[in-house]
Image (cartoon, rainbow, N blue to C red; front, side):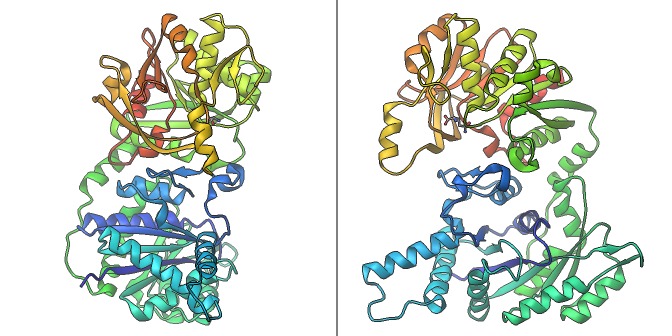
Length: 528
Ligand code: GLN
């Protein structure tokens, strides 16, 4: 009979301790021992997906291959594990409640009082089991978002409490162990409180991972073991680090994966992190440093461009190059000119929505084009490159995007009728994986080394096909198109160090062990 094992990860004391990264790191270690791991993330909020949430509040929206829009943690899982996650693997309270209410309306529970326990918790467990079965997983790692004690995640905690009685599970609790300067000690009380909060809910962790500034000392480890009732070797230290890709190696040193397997009753599989370790060493001993400017508008929030920054780091690890990405405010460029771009070796114009800072992005494109600075335009960024080219090279007056100015004389970027059809069906964007046909001999072909390239998308507008000819006649190559030739997927300039725009988001397919080829070539060009 098919029987997966379960790892439950909860967080205590504070949010933002890096539960996603810790879970992804443990998953990586287990994967390196030959286990098939499937990550599930449970989020308490009522949104069905986070696609409509403000990136300033929530960080970047991560787009999955199947078009799911999920939170950043899925990005960590993909980058660490090198797998394509699925929308289904993200449970939100909104998704679960919606399903239960729909079932109730259909009469599935006729005669019953529909309740949180067992109907809603059963729905959570049903989804867990379904995913495990579909994926044929050896181990499923269920990360519960938020912090123990939040009202929002009670539902998921209760479901995992029940799961513990039914299946082989190991429960990892991640907490904060602060250092109190006045007494010169790492304090364990917050951890003890957080564990007693778990106990109220009928949960008892098997492994406690303590986040701290410095490595956990022996005495706080002993205290945690004693007061929280876990074995001493199951108290794992997770100190601050500069390089997130080192975390699996640190957790391995602490024996995290070994203890997880012990608790699950598994004893086989050699850990193999050699390649990973080599890349980490590369990253930490670079032979050159490169400055990249990301010309965007979400400058207040560190996590808005996380996939782009990570994709650059992956490329850097493989090229032994240190990358210093910085977000440059496009509105500032609009108001004060392009001088703030002068210090960068390469520029990325990222995805975006709406008109704020648009002219700054267009000016940045012009600056890079005219000065032979490597430029990578992502989605909205490519649209801005095309507008700039239309205005300044093709002489198309007042060229613009329909999104910015519907009445512009030349609508270079337009919502196509096909997209409007999708809108009628409830979706509003072209989402997820689409394949482009690449022109042989182009720079994009050179980067990917193949004629068919699949990347992920998240957009409504396209380069207006009525202008493809004019653009090409004036020297802008459309080097990748959709199968029917209607949609421009990649554009490039021949006599330029690196000037490539893509309607897709190649950063979403970049992994630590296999960087995205376009980012890699972009970094290589910037390095030179
Ligand atoms: N706003 C643009 C569109 O919808 C670009 C979106 C993006 O950059 N992801 O087409």
